[in-house]
Length: 217
Image (cartoon, rainbow, N blue to C red; front, side):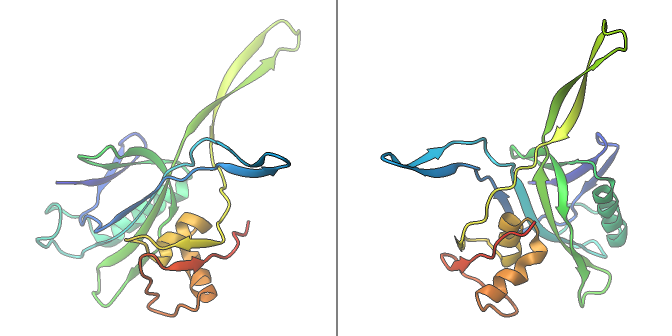
């Protein structure tokens, strides 16, 4: 059985999702560049892979039910406040799905949540992005010019791939997932809907071709 875990500060705090998502969308694109050169035609310059993204939806139920992964489930608003606090810290968390190779340091990119007619139960969408630690060497020289100290500072790698003009819908896609994958934020899904004349409840179908707005910022 799969278990979805989020942890913070080297496992000082841990949260297992009480209800496993029905789908997990993993983005794993590239930043390859294509250029047109006189007499040679188009050439492709291979770049490093883009950072992985993980998008899924689930909910925090008010009471235990047979569909829950375990009995001692957290209170919905306490779980939401915990993830909100981790996001506000600006630090990465760890995302693990047991019995899979998924074990990554990630940043929390987007975490919209809402309370529907089922009062007390909190529904949410969670968008995560792989976080890479890079050691950058800096040299500090003393005033006498004789001593040099090498220090390392972690920096985050955060590539910004371009947005294609069109996108073909894949099974499991939603406008929110597509918006997060290509525009950087799931909350921009209405821009895609407006451009393609899609109205609420924003239903799309596999192999449907969508026009994509330009990514701003």
